Image (cartoon, rainbow, N blue to C red; front, side):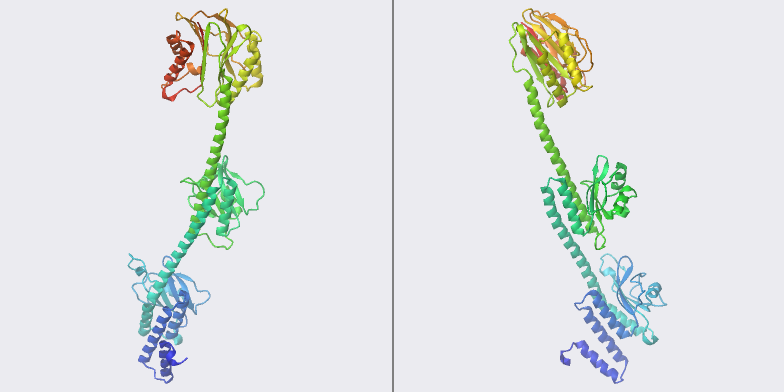
Length: 600
């Protein structure tokens, strides 16, 4: 390569070396040497090398010009600390980060004449030269300290750093300030871009995972997907999912753990102590002391991530140490917590879906039971000479425990029954079906006291101890207008005469199914023309108004007295409508059943 093709700085340096060999040293030559060094420094600082390489090359240039035995470049780090990013001649025990007191202006710190003795002693340096001002990089700050420091040790031959050397260092600082500041800005932008790239990658991953989570209605598939995603994303070998159970907090899914036996269930108190403070991802070692932290530490978990949809933490994700040993960053915690929220939402969707399916199944079963129960009521009345019959059941639940029946007997006689089973819902309806079948089988087979004793025995032997039935049962002989009955703990029917006289039919005995051996008495009445016999359940007499006042026996009698001259069906409708009007908008809280027998 010819001289004409060499860089200009090399040409000047070569000429300067020729003067030196000729022995013609002078202040002008020294100044030329410094200018050439500054030109070389500027060329190096504006090269395309990395920051550390640029600073290392620049340090060599300065040390060579000043013949310093050691030196370093320090770049501003957190708070007032500076990191050693390039060094020459420092001992192996020299610190890599030191705290430097704030510089007063841009003055160079000289050993023995300033406030920087601690920093100079720590690195065994003679001068510290500030480079640039941090305030230029941070708007709104006036003097936040230098962005970098150039430190040099003793010069060769024990020469001091005089005014010319300090002037040269100031020139070096002026040349280096802009490139170093630009480098810091560039590094900051790189970190921001790197964080944005990580965010974009995580968002794409979360989007893909969310589609898989929402497409699954299997809890095991969801928990497997969450733990496998976290393990692959963070490169960890173990992960566990803790969710609330009836007895507290339990590990519902774990991967990579080599534990024997069932995972423990932590008490509500233990769970509250941990979940109450777990509002964001935190190291396991920062959790409150207790069994949960001991368990996570024993299984070598490093990070605890809260689970929950709102402000309430309902569970936690435990993530093991990274295989690389790298710590978890804030972005890692945000990713894990977002994934945890998606998993919680997916599990909640599964739970609601299961509840919906269960409700649909129960509704179908209830509809079937309701249809079966309705089929047990008589679809038509037998013709009874000289009498009218009307009956209706209004159930205010899917299925109920009220029952009525009209059963034809031999010789033209007719059996009438109204029953009320204790309780509500499906158990009551099943017992009611049993009473219906038993009455149909026993009606007309024996005297009424014997019939009731048999029915009581059957119910006592085949029902739970707290189950019972109130029953009013009677047999009508239309030819003689004679009505025999037994009242087993039921609301006494109302007999309203044509002249307004009211009787109650009370003869009988206790409720059925509670006592083993029970005796019943039989009563009988003769129904005159115009008499109305009303058999009702307590859904009529105990119906509550909006003010919690019962409808009562007197209002039943008043409703019957108002309509007892009307046909039986109209009188029945008037009675039930009056009861429902009494309850108001809230409606009845119990099944409403009535059977009317009217003598023509």
